[in-house]
Image (cartoon, rainbow, N blue to C red; front, side, top):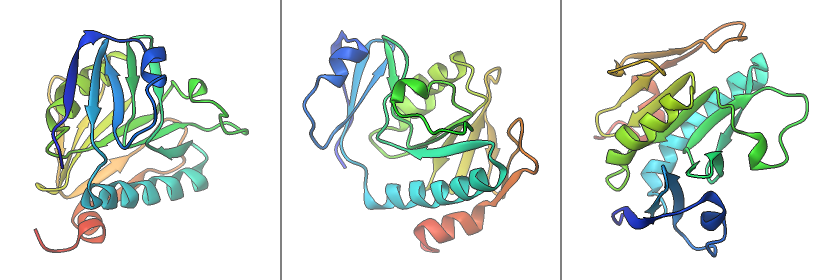
Length: 189
């Protein structure tokens, strides 16, 4: 996988959306354009397994709707992110436009060599500042999840079990992490 690039001028969300389609992902981190190549198959396997579990939970509890990137989540003209996976609050009618999906219940980024620094620092700061109740940084190499909440100065490090209890949920979602990573990427490290 190639390296991420930050292009050195201030951008707006409208300018980012005007970039012609290619195989890169474009995000706007406080006005800086952050460009990453398409994710690896391993990365996508982890995203897919997590989405499968979140989606099943959301369908049963109707607490929200699980979604996948690419998706332009615009918090402001200088903040446009594409979380690998995220959950928006439940509504009877699903949103028809990305602009209707600003109030996230959960944002998830799966680490890759190109995105690890931005995921753990720049994006975390944005998600915390925007009041996203939970932000998960999934580390497939270490087989753990860092859970961040808006007021956290340090993450909660989860390696055995993740319990997500969003407001309005009738029961929490519990993910046994060793099993999760085995299902997503196998037993080989």
